[in-house]
Length: 214
Image (tube, rainbow, N blue to C red; front, side):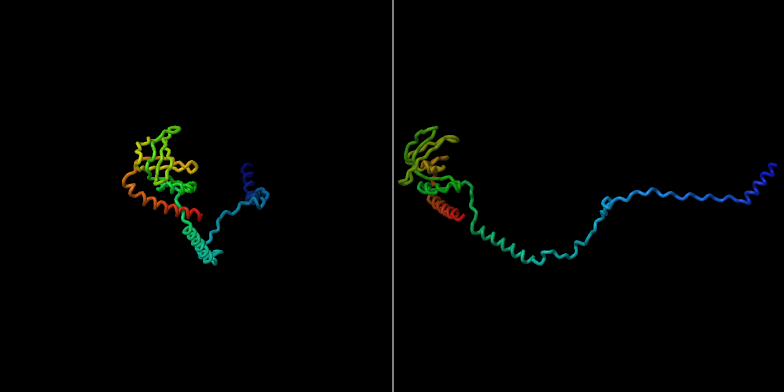
């Protein structure tokens, strides 16, 4: 009976062979809602152009006009500089006589300078207020009051009737020369004093003319 059942099973298998099972169709993934156009990634690729080729600028046609205008402006600026040269504003020492010192002192607000005079001591040195040393200096028939304060250096011994070199700032309101340096004049200075006065007068006349044009 076992042999018959196995024979019967073999016969059935030969008559009805097993059919292969069909594969299940792949299930598509769930579709996502389409994103708005604004959220789509932008194309960040750069578009290169040939910038080395001959390109015509929008103002290329007017290049000659622009160059001529620039040249005229430069020429005008050079003419202005040539017509009105700048003058130095540094501190100067102006060699002058007493009358010249009184005249040129009216321009001290525009140009800073100190005066240098060579004059003869015409009085004794007297002691004033706050330790001031007062004395008179004469240039021909012109006399000026001088004041010296011994703040940084002492007043040297002055001899009446001797020519001295005085450097200081002239006070027009008080008609006083506030001296910062007083000493006997050197022979070389006395020989060149007149030439120095003439040169300084010419310099001041040119400076006054320049100030009037500014």
